[in-house]
Image (cartoon, rainbow, N blue to C red; front, side, top):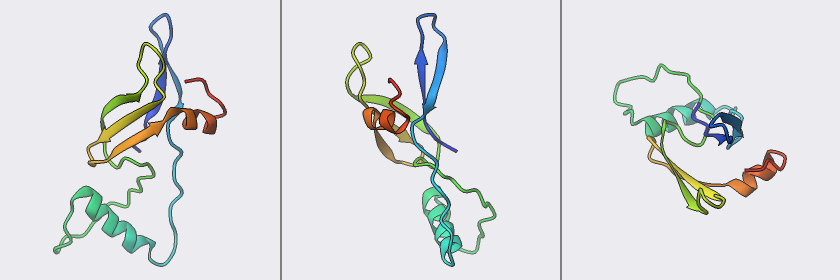
Length: 111
């Protein structure tokens, strides 16, 4: 899965993993879920339906459906405190992450 993970660098230059920036989504089930997933994969992965079949049953449960190419601070700075950042992925999506909101969801983690 392509889920951004928050890291912190301590005073010794060591990286510590703080946690995931998003929670994994549950798979949608129902009579139309397979057809919906097939068309969503065709759209997200750029696959056309002309005679070729999709053989992958991979379920992507994150916002980004491809690699994350870039992370930028939107509000704040590395000298002060970043409160919002953006990620841009190979899937063409630009996602804004409100770090204060994420910290609350992660049990008031200090970011």
